[in-house]
Each structure stands twice: as C-alpha cells, then as structure tokens.
Image (cartoon, rainbow, N blue to C red; front, side, top):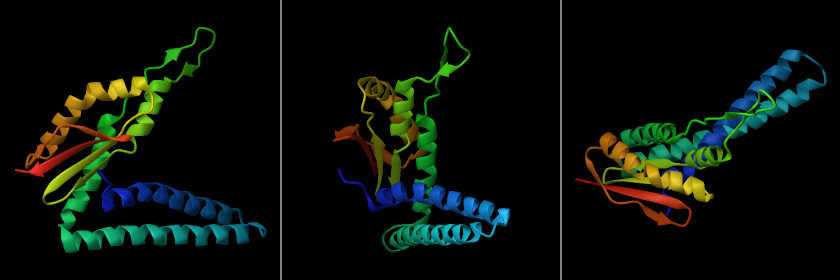
Length: 183
C-alpha cells in the first residue's frame, strides 16, 4: 500500500505549520526588543516564516484543487478532522511511577515511544473508500499494545464512518492499513 497524496501533504503540513508559527512569534518577540542589532534577525525570521507560510498555503491549495477535481472538498475536512480525532483516540496517558529517592516522575518509555508512533497516524476519506494508516511502533511492547487496540480502533472508525465496510488490518512494512469501501 502506498500513501495517498493527502497523506504525504498532511505529514508535511503539521510540522510546517508549527515551524511557521514559531518563526513568526520569535520574529515578533525580537522586533519588540527594539534593539538595532535585532532588526536584521527579525526581518530574516519574518521572511523565513513568510516563505514557510507560502509553502504551507501551496500544499493546502494543491490538495484542495485535487479534491475539487477528483472528489468532494468536504471529504478533505472530514479527513483532517478524523485524523486529529484518531490521534487523540490512540494517545496513551502515561502512568508514571514516583521514584523512591526523589519526587520526580520517570516517564514510561514504552508509552512515550507508542505515542510518538501514533502521532503519525492518518485517515484519508474519499467518495469510494477510507484509507487508514497507523504507524507500527518499533518496540515489541508497543506493537503488543497496538495489537490489543486493533478491535477498538476498527470499532471507532466504523462508528464514525457508517457508510463504509472495513476490512481487516494489513501490515505493510512499518504501517498498519485499514481500508474501508463504500457500502
């Protein structure tokens, strides 16, 4: 299975959005300091954030035009919303243990690595099918946790997309794919 163009663009869009926002805020902060030396730096950050914003806008518009020509634009919004909802659904809360010697919490590396993999999950909804990609964690414990959640994931997706039949999960390289076809 190959990633769809939406999945490729979405995986680029989220980091670009946050980088653009950080550059803009940092540029405004440096500009507010009103130092003579900071003006060239703030100007450079503004141009860089403008460049990143333009690239982000280009990605969004190209996906929108693709959806207008080949599919329905409402499916683009459904894909984005359901991707965010799926990532929220898959997120595992860390139950940290307090160390005996200190009051600090030690994060659970298994859940941290699992959550890092789940942040890359995506859903692409078109008129004829729903394609779900869930990145498989690298560790055996993370894969075991994902395996226990497969039934819940399938049930969650089928309740959100009632017009589609979902197949069983298929593993291709480092991703679990779930394909839903229209009834």
